Amino acid sequence: MNVKIIKNITNSEFKILIFSSILGIISSFSLPPYNLFFLNFIVFPVLFSLIILLKNHKKYLFLLGLFFGFGYFCSNLYWISNSLKFEDTLKFLIPITIILIPLVMSFYYALVFTLLSFFKLKYNYSSILIFALLFSFFEYLRGNFFTGFPWNLVVFSIVEYTYSLQLLSIIGTYSLNLLVVSLFLSPTIFFFNINLKLKFIIIFFILLLVIINNIYGIKKFENYKKLKNEDFKFKISIVSPKIGLKRYFSNEKTSKIIDDLIKISNPDKNVETLFIFPEGILPGKTFNDLQNYKNLFYESFSKKHKIILGINSEDNFRIFNSLILADNRLRIISQYDKNKLVPFGEYLPFEDKFYKIGLKKVTQGYNSFSPSDERNLIKVGNYNFLPLICYEIIYSGKLNNKKKKIDYIINISEDGWFGNSIGPSQHFIHSIFRSIEEGKNIFRSSNNGISAHINPLGFVEESIESTQSGVIEVKNIKLISATLFAREGNKIFFYFIVIYITFIFFLKRKDL
Image 1 (cartoon, rainbow, N blue to C red):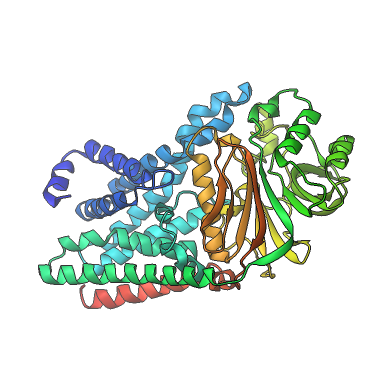
Image 2 (cartoon, rainbow, N blue to C red; image 1 turned 45 degrees about the vertical axis):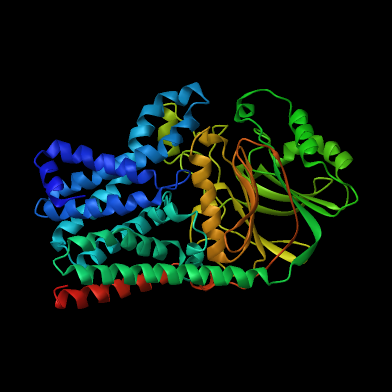
């Protein structure tokens, strides 16, 4: 956008704040399921120019960031309010949720824009690096502090370009987010006070780096195709039942739900099989309650079968959201209790105070779930898998904290709370990023969401959309060694911060 046009917009404070919100809305369309990533090549240079023009107005820049963030998050997080539609006692919170959650997320951008005012940005290289660094650092803070919500980072806009994403295996999501924000700012170079020839040389150099990165991704994929398949000696059946969320709040018989699950999974008693059922398919029931129906499992499954269930469990008056590996007699082989709970969804902060005004957690029941602090690997045959429940998959660098050798990842989820919205697509892309970062196959079973087998390079081998039910069968996979990022984690992001700061000081000294 022409600088003169931007100056005309700044003549009206109200207009520029509305314009900032519109920029946020436009940027949100770069994310899944729209994936119009090129919009950010317009949005970020315009934001950069607005900050330069308003750099002496710190309070106004705070509002500029707040309005941008509000437009961005309002248009891509509206679906959160859908989870409040199922119980009448919570419906009054819908307008509050639509406004409050985006507003809280927007404060991160408001702080970024305020801090940028202290650096007196200009149209030069160091200013671009400062913008990208501060913006990406606060994205890291957003994803890690106060429980963390690393949803809809800018880097997710390039999720469709899987070859470009292979860098994740080395540097991780937050570092790639920093590079991508820097890339989206590159058109700003045309505003620099340098000759046109030099501008094109710099743009060519940036394009060359992008091409080299893609070549790296293509070569990595070609090498992956040459690997031999590892035979499990058993079959994995990823079951996607699409059981309506209204069953949480109805009196539908548990036996009917189990019968439906068995019909969809269609077990063959003569074939060694690991059945993966999603989270939340037996609402209101604990694993102890399920023992009343074990004859249904025993009649349909055989000794050659193992079953993964997402179900509640109890221990000493505490309730856990659990992933349980059981045999055909519903005897527990292994159990994982969810570590990272969803605030207000699975537990109520300041529970005693909220109860007094009639509030409860969104999911069924009044008591909050308890978190576990253990995430041990589970063994099936000769292979170890890392268990993850629902949105635990969204936390980059925090999956395998004990750095144990894992062969694959199993993620079970219930995405029905998102409704018929863009939420399931946004949730799913985290699995793609985690598979590349960790270098592991991911088997994802989601009720009312996208179920899939994703290979270690982030390519979706097979999937079932959120509107469909069915089964994905996997008999063998290709294994690769642990990635650099899997070994080092998010400390790599802080190495990038040091590198950026070094470049900024160097460029500042040269007044570049």
